[in-house]
Image 1 (tube, rainbow over the protein chains, first blue to last red):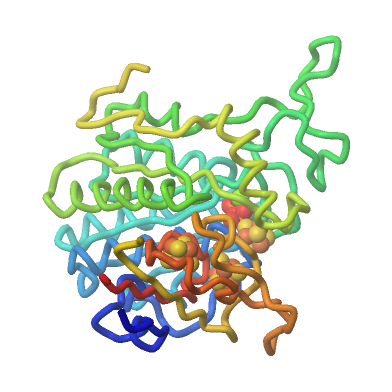
Image 2: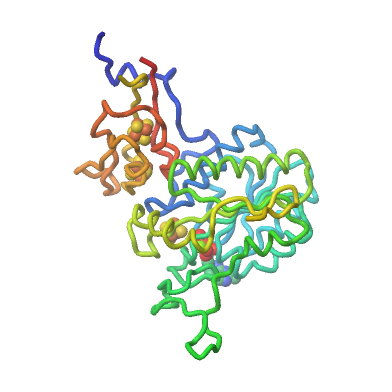
Amino acid sequence: MAEITLQDIIQPENLVYEKSKLLTEKPFHYCPGCGHGTVHRIIAEVLEELGVDDRTIGVSPVGCAVMAYDYFDVDFVEAAHGRAPACATGIKRVWPDKVVFSYQGDGDLAAIGTCETIHTCNRGENITMIFVNNGIYGMTGGQMAPTTLVGMKTATTPYGRMPQWPDGTPNNGFPLQITQLIAQLPGTRYVTRQAVFSAAAVRNAKKAIKKAFQNQIENKNGVNFVEIVSNCNSNWKMSAVDANKWLQDNMLPVYPLGDLKDNFELIKK
Amino acid sequence: MAKFRGAIVVDTERCKGCGVCITACPCGVIELAKEVNGKGYNYAFMANPEACIGCASCGITCPDGVIKVYKKAL
Ligand SMILES: Cc1ncc(C[n+]2csc(CCOP(=O)(O)OP(=O)(O)O)c2C)c(N)n1
Ligand code: SF4
Ligand code: SF4
Ligand code: SF4
Ligand SMILES: [Mg+2]
């Protein structure tokens, strides 16, 4: 048999993967290996596959993903810090035919924006919420977030997060499992926690994001909420590869992956 | 013998040398180049092209979407 050359393989008809056409040509400003890029990529793939790009409106947060609007070739609004779900609520109510999603970090969604998160989920707005939890305020230089793990060193917890002093008096508080919390609310239809550290995790996360958009497109009422446990290698002060390993060893025991709620029913573990 | 051969094309100038694709590849195909691109990153390349099966694990985990994957049945 004649030897097959790379030129034989690298032909348009053999192409099995390339980034979505719904991503603009602008290079992501994210640090090397940052999960925000991967999450953007799979959202774009889902919107492209569902063919709803011409009627999608995204709402970007304050945080590292503040300029998400530069990367998606769909309409976007940039909300004030933590207010993305409120903004998305307004857009969806005025334009029920649009496909509306918010994209937020943990500082945005679970600290300054907790009020908007809880009430949007409690009202059961027919939107898709994407929540990228990297356990830290990435953009501002790595301060403690409500989601920071116990013992995790950050700029504002240089000795590690300590929920209480040894005598039991309150100190930094406990990691906030906001996804468990909002799963309890009657307004949430679909609540899931995913990750993007490996090919298998990316495939699962993409399936979950697709479902979270499909539910909205089919006008099924209620919030569709997807948490992605992600990395912030720069502020965790690790390489991207080490951060993905650290995430599996340390983040996942506190933030386990899988569906928490489907069709308004809590999933018993 | 493998039923498929694969190949990847890395957009070298957009690669950030994070190495995530190297961990994702089940076949040990990818390494980081000794040379750097215009931004100073050691970019990913196919060090062992014959081993590639075109599974696309690298492409779907690359945060920057800079890998195109090709797959050909033999
Ligand atoms: C009203 C207001 N308060 C504080 C800030 C400063 N600030 C910018 S981003 C951010 C936190 C971002 O963290 P997160 O939402 O987790 O996003 P990440 O960068 O980690 O993706 C803070 C506190 C601000 N921009 N506006
Ligand atoms: S600071 Fe953290 S969250 Fe922000 S781009 Fe860098 S790695 Fe990503
Ligand atoms: S995952 Fe992407 S950006 Fe990172 S080294 Fe591989 S090709 Fe380059
Ligand atoms: S397509 Fe699969 S085998 Fe080929 S380089 Fe990528 S991960 Fe490795
Ligand atoms: Mg964060």
